[in-house]
Length: 212
Image 1 (tube, one colour):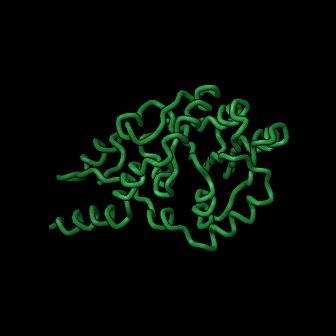
Image 2: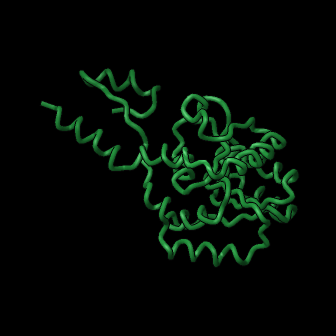
Image 3: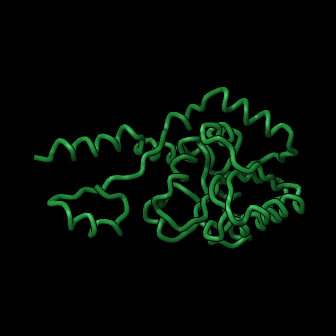
């Protein structure tokens, strides 16, 4: 079994038959978050001066994820707040930007089981890495968020499901506003449901049963 196309040739060296599978998403945990996780997130967020609309980024604070470009985009979004959850080499840069911009809020890392609670309070999820297999988009979708995704390799997979953008502040800001206007579209949530872990596990179960 392989997830990434780049791995197919390597896997074929060791198996007579290979099949693609995917990363799984704990769909129900995001689609119907635990009330305690929702309450915990809301209690934390209630201490912040959030604006009418909320964008959220969950993940690594590294240059590859265009975190700085995302924060710079908030200059163009006076009616939006950005919540950042995660850690990485750009941690201090994010902290400094939080002090400079009143609509950027950095909460550091939170227990993974609490993440669905934070997503439940957001409008748009952000993913600016050029990776068609990022689990983050599926989690955002399961949570019912509209999504802004970096254009590139992911366009073939997510065409019509997310709002694509160049990783530039002005373009990101416009994409966030465009994504918000499509919030009522549940197509991405339905797409994410297809990657429930039970479905992925069945791929592996069938592969194991086929071995003689």
